[in-house]
Length: 246
Picture 1 (tube, rainbow, N blue to C red):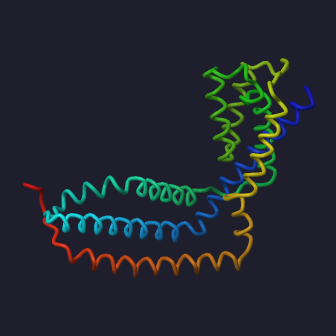
Picture 2 (cartoon, rainbow, N blue to C red):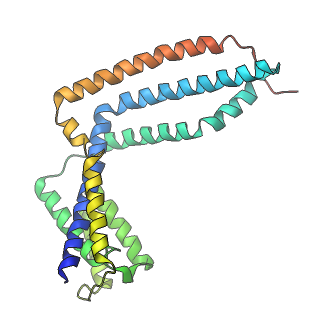
């Protein structure tokens, strides 16, 4: 195999390993701080909702129009769609973090990594552009990525066995514009290391940092609770009529 292709393959494997680490760091971070983050975001969503309700009521009042609860609710439902989606995402991450299984041993991780790298060598779409568009291969590749992320060794074995039957690993490999692709993936690796969730690993190894984050989150939660109470009082001053506009 050409030396540059070997370098490219090594970089692809390094990037996949980093992405897997980041996935695990995200779950660990969610397990540590997720409940507070979820509570805080839920409060922020309630505050945003109250502010939008107040703005709506102010506008209706200036126009001397009746404020109907059903119209207000429809308006708010549309306004907070993106916020609700983000909250649902946080809830799902927290759920996943709680369901995370027992950590695997070093030897198990080594076996999983080795097998995954063999599959990369055989069918990674960047290494084998001739396989792009092959639905069977693309489906196997998606399964391999998911199994690798979830430390599913049996699943990887099943994928590998199917791949080895339908792929000739000894064929020549040619990759267009290899130098630029190497540079691009090196940049992507650097970006991963410079940002969250990779940086969570340093936070989660520092007890003082963990304590400080918990304290800051708790303070912010209490601040938003107070802010929410004030907004609820302000909203209560408006006369909101239950029902629909005649």
